[in-house]
Length: 269
Ligand code: HEC
Ligand SMILES: [Cu+2]
Image (tube, rainbow, N blue to C red; front, side):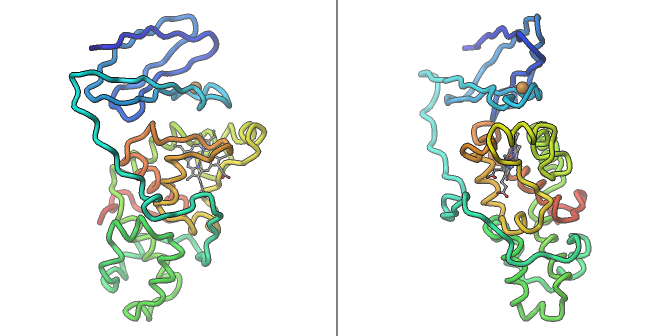
């Protein structure tokens, strides 16, 4: 049964998008009526949200649509997010125990990749380790004893690059520009156009993804957990109902480009 909606705005331009769906976002203009017809092929609770940066409370513009009915098979229970399975406390501080001197480069890491024991390249390894943990484990490998610390960091960047794809990095970049840059800044420094408003509203500055001292202490599962759940009163929105699982991993991969030089064309290799 299609759902027909008529939307308008009484102030500025907004938009109307549905999380975890392929339905395209539509702009909602002041003083004009926008009509959309929605059909859902699965039951569930869908979150609608605004994708136009209309003001500091923009991300609060959300609501839910409940889809039920006899036409649908009963919903499958979802798997819990990885940070829960790993028992990570995502609210704990995560300082990096070691940081590189320069900016690690995945392409340089390729040079040493033949020495790398293969278990380090698995998706499980990547998702459950911070870069700082990984570099310390690499340091303990006898096969890598001849490498300098800077070589090892390049290898870590290579592991991180191997666990994404060109499409994943492009999607992460697109989602970041649309949903995150207004707070975290285009360059990930936590200095987006709304960062001062968020500080005033919630008392916290958006995280600086270009700071190795914190970012390299955070593994993909932890970052994904923060994205899914949000920052509980810090002003960091919850994105769990908005993005698909793959989209949250793509965002995580993209966040590491503020720490590592990765070549999108070589990603996944
Ligand atoms: C409304 C502003 C705002 C938006 C939009 C926003 N964030 Fe945040 N984000 C924050 C704030 C504030 C913090 C810091 C919370 C804290 O200090 O605990 C944060 C923290 C984070 C963290 C935790 C970093 C760490 O080191 O623990 C991650 C990851 C993150 N944001 C990712 C994202 C992504 C990805 C998006 C877009 C999909 C996004 N954020 C959109 C405000 C925002
Ligand atoms: Cu908005």
